[in-house]
Length: 118
Image (cartoon, rainbow, N blue to C red; front, top):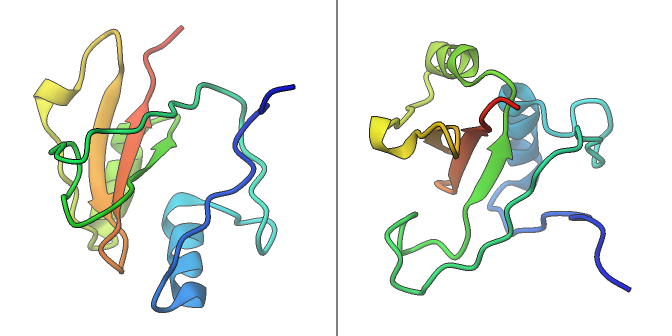
């Protein structure tokens, strides 16, 4: 037997209801059901990082990565909503796709990933 997918992402929040609403409004997570998000099938990267990695802030134990269909329009929507976006051309490659970073209202790092076509 083996795992067949990620069944949930659970984490602590100072204001769980407000944070869930933020994810619904800005990223469409669990928008149709209060707690369940029916996602499109596709790749999921499961990767522990070294304790001293600088890939995401050292004061955070985790960073969630959301696979997105069209990164540029989403970046524009998030900027219009007053959300700070970090991009870096060095993050983007034809082999891995395009990336951007944001933080949710509680400071959790969120990576947005548009996989390469094909």
